[in-house]
Length: 399
Image 1 (cartoon, rainbow, N blue to C red):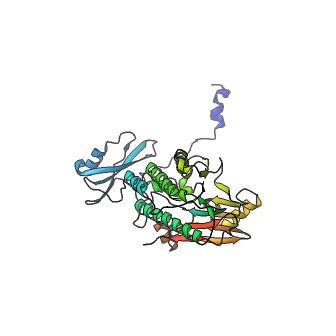
Image 2: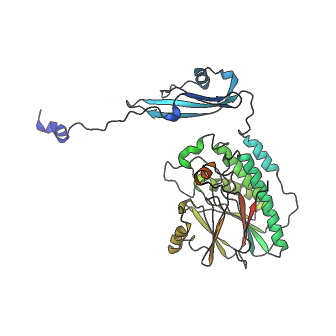
Image 3: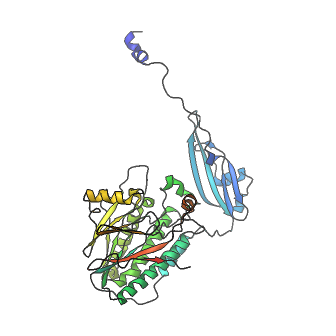
């Protein structure tokens, strides 16, 4: 054999290629049963070659469970590769006793019907003037479960706070404020989503609604908020940005302007366009490639950013925006969310307000930090001749 024909062999230093570490079955996917006879639970099947998983009835039989006595509520799959390169697969089957109505397995359509029927209990007249009344429900995270609460409690809380926001506006008008504009600012995390916390939110322990149900309920809820506030003003502005929970995916570099909060509001915008009584409602969205938004509210520049992009140093983030003379950096008033607690700070002649949350809270944060966020709804007055700091109010949930 000619030397040239052995070039590859001559060029190689010796044995090449990496050894592949033997991968055992992931801990979460080892066969097991975790079941309460009255409430249900789950089983994890034995690993099998990919594509050879039996149906759910056979999986239940593996654990001596009668398929006729249990109702499957959801199913999750996992695949992993062994040291030999073989792909294995396992399933987790969540079940409840047949005939049992599970309290936290919400009927999304029932929630939607409840939202559609809700109306404020008073006749309302549109106000006039160059002042703007701002309502900012932040971190609603529809679908989230925590502290023994879930979406049903979130719906009740948000509707209650929406009604309180009407009371607040009427009281401001009685004080002589001329408020012809209502701003319903949405600073992000409208739904719990699936992407945050490295995908751990996909489990039933974190959410009581699937993603499409979260979006549908959030859309109907936003429509209710708009129909409640729209009769109060000559002009209604709905500025919208996405939060980290609103991200559609983290597997690829996605456009930050493309998220669930924008999708929810965009669908509601289409519905408003078909209703003659809602023609004075205008929506504002971030441009492609952006996750912030600045809107001129009757002479006051209102800047929205969710807060996750700022890390723990919001002042450093805003200073950078100001130094770069971005639209956000030149705003007069900044509204943010993300941190789930109310904060208000003068920044020279400008103002930064961090919204409280409207979600059920966070057991994880309480265990980590010893603190719990208190739900509430930010309201304030801006635009025209009004000083933004003068009428800031956080509406609290009453027991």
